[in-house]
Image (cartoon, rainbow, N blue to C red; front, side, top):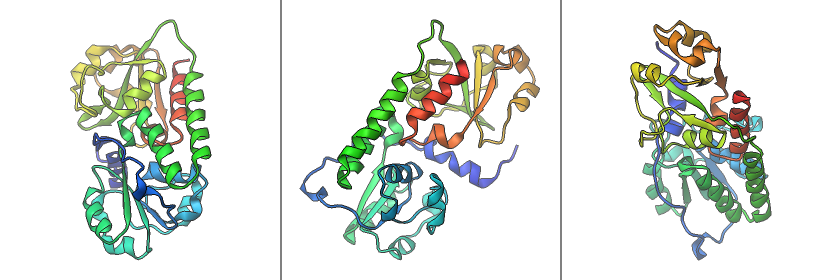
Amino acid sequence: MNFPVKKLKSLAFFVVISICTLPSLGAEDKFSPKKIVCLSPSGAEILCALDSFDKIKARTDYCDYPEELKKLPSVGGFDGKNLSIETILAYSPDFVYGSQGMHDFLKKPLENLGIKVFLSNAANGISQTKQEILYIANLLEKQDEGKKIVEHIEQQINSVPKSASIKTVYYEVWNEPFMTAGKSSFINELLEAAGYKNIFDSIKESYPMVSEESIIASQPQIIILPDANGINPQDIKMRRGWNRIPAVKNNSIFAINADLISRPGPRIGEAVLALSKIAN
């Protein structure tokens, strides 16, 4: 099955993962950005949550939530292939907010021009996301707002009902080939926080390819699909051999907002709650 290129590229946001720590807030960071070019969809959400929309001068096509972001000019697609330093410089930024694994090639050239660059690695997990929110809040001199956002996230996650029985789940990132969330993925951490047992959490890789046979053999009780991958619950039911899976037998196949579950930003608490409601 062939899907639109935009949907394929949107998956890159949570498939491309880098592991490192946030930079420390030293003396060189004691400035408050005035003109930001935001290349990261989750970064744009963080900036808006920190009431700093007015500082964003340009975005990518995928920085589309909240809705007001769509009013801003775009520098192109999310992936680095469609971005140029010249286009970014046209907006005279003093701060560029990108994503590791996607915008690394921009860092050194922009910093050589005196522009500060931050590459998000929030997709490494919930804790890293909360750290990034606090880091950006500090840069923007909005520490109190940052703390409130993090506290709200923690309250949402802690409010997930504790179930006596943990249901097994298969999360389908893609279907040609079959790709799912492994143990080290951001999505797996959300699933666990929501009270699920990921049938592929024994695979250390973040987003591994798996066989159809292994999915069927794992007998998941619930199947969850991102609504951007072009597959719906009815498509799942039509797959040969999948009628033996408990999730298919019991009509426990659900679609969830792809952006909500794949963007490590201020809505991660909302994502965990949305996932938990599926099981209940």
